[in-house]
Image (tube, rainbow, N blue to C red; front, side):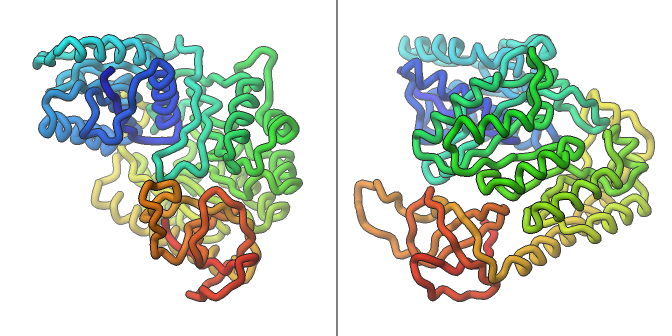
Amino acid sequence: MATFYIEQFGCRATQADGAAIERQLSERGCGRAQSVESADIVVFNTCTVTAAADAQAREAIRKLHAANPNTQIVVTGCYAQRAPEELAALPGVLHVVGNSHKPQIPDLLADMSRGLSNNFVPTEKLLAPILMGDIFEQQDVLVAPVLGGERNHTRPTLKIQDGCNNRCAFCVIPFVRGKSRSLPPQTVIEEINKLACSGYKEIVLSGINLGAWGRDLSPRHGFLDLLRQILDETSVERLRLSSIEPLDVTRDLILLFASTPRLAEHFHMPLQSGSDRILARMHRWYRTEHYARRVELICEYVPHAAIGADVITGFPGETEEDHAATMNFIARRPFTYLHVFSYSSRPGTRAESLPNHVAPKIIKQRARELRALGETKSASFHRSQAGRTLSVLTLHHPDRVSASSASGIPDSTDWTPALSCNYLKLRISGNWLPNRFMDVVCSADQQTLATPELQPAEPILL
């Protein structure tokens, strides 16, 4: 049987699709290679949210083909759905499979595996075969938790929703992932119970538009009701949300977070701009006053919560006044981190045809200013947590030899990475096993002396 490897790009939803494909292949008895270089068949699971993401995928494909010309390459994902011909023309690519046909990949790879067992040698083609259809006819959600690699599988991500019914002017995602669709509630419960029974203590729920979960189901369900059901019917010790739209962060949702330590004190709400004029041009369904009110409610009921945001700079027509409004809006509020994106024109989106595109040089400067502000906000949040006792989950150390390794030789590392309930990345003095909840005192300095029961932890960037 040929071995396979899935090379992942992009967001958690894309990674979740890859995990589902990997699960299906493993159930068929296919062997997973340890690296992209050692695999017989490599599936490139692509992203297309920016031009840079497209370029990264093309470069990786060319690099692999140059190094291993006999490797069979299949390309899927959002880039494959948006521009399959571009990928089919790349040297070494044997098949391109859009998101619409991702469930067919296990059958395709099984056929390719049989070809390899018969000493099939791939030949160059002018254009690889393309499997693609209307993504808006897609009804299913590929299901499998993202466990990560051997060194980073403490916090699995479970995708429970796919697609999006919004039409933000800058976003190509609805056109490559289709309409919003949800995993049935009982399937969500079953998947979470499987993970909890396997020993995982924190699970991250993800989706393209997570707060829209359940609106397409019959009968209609609400995301808040799902969270209550998870708390009632599963034993998961901590549940974290990946990202949720501002208008889906209701008072009732915040009150639920305030009522139980099983929901992580962490809200990631895309902002995109602090200028109402730009939000309108972006076709976003809220204004800054709505966003600000959500932040106020979070601070009122969950005062030490992490509040993160996505921000796009350089959207067509963005003036210096608009940029200043965004900087001012962020500066005045207790954000704990920012994800800053430079605007990238995407074919087929409304923004592509808008006038007054911002010069790349200006976009880069504004992005630098926003990232500097984000770093200031992050440092301020770290300082505000000094001296507080935090519940943390220990993680796998990036350089540590696994406790189950054959050598059995302990490493000399004297600290362990951990993640707090409110998304503070810490390191704890001492060598601790991963996937363990601990109470620690957050320290702003380099102190390391402590008792095992209550460890001081210092902020780090992981």
